Length: 230
Image (cartoon, rainbow, N blue to C red; front, side, top):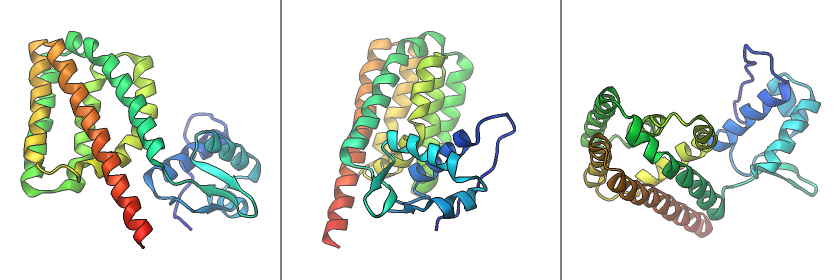
């Protein structure tokens, strides 16, 4: 059984909400793998909660499409399908595109300097071909860029997809044939923000995020082919 821990937060919140977040995080990150059977008695004991809030959390996870009820088997963790990933990226990319005018308008010289510092760190990792460290740093770069917009409602929607994107971005980055060339787009994005070139920023961002989606779907297709061969 996966090693997950239940750590109640300091603020007063319903146990079912905390259980939902712990399980959701575990499923999205792969700590609770696809095909895992969620046995209520075992998970309730592991999370130090009763079965009632666990069931409520599982119902929410079912609405999210992360688990499903199967006859004679109970609650099972669903594998992500190509349609799931396509939809997640579509939502995320559409929301990101809405932030671009505000980013151009609000970006400060400090923002630009901070982004360039991250780019330099990414240069070092690319030279070492350290993909495992590069992937989260790339996500941090994009997140920092998006946060400049300060549009709280849009950011909440984007952040609701962040865990998914973090998991899938590692797959996408491994599909890039020339990381150095691909990384140049990150520099170009920052240059366009600094120049306040909204149209150029819009075109490059759309290309960049759609390419990430394409590479992730390609990686998943290849993964599924390998699994079917096995």
